[in-house]
Image (cartoon, rainbow, N blue to C red; front, side, top):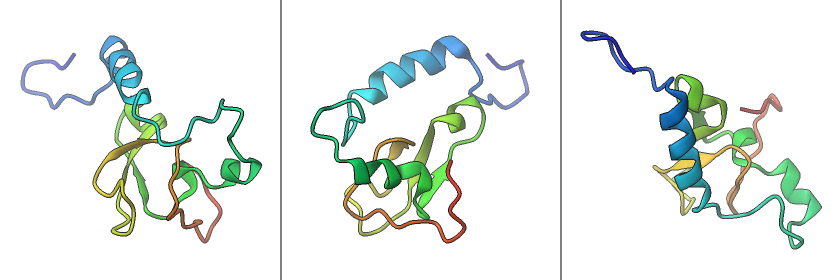
Length: 95
């Protein structure tokens, strides 16, 4: 947790684990499912040009979608999730 007068960075393991458990229930695509097409491994949120990582420890796995064409615009997304409007980053980076 934060020290009085300092901004909270979100780097609290217990809080982050609780968030991760809640947020995983809203995945659009499960990478572990038998119906997960191979091409989706290359079309994950973390590699989309419209995905912006959160700050702090949560940013290692989560970011915000900023694609106006996506159903997830303005929502926090898991970096390994994805959607139909995925747009590859020109530099090929991830995360």
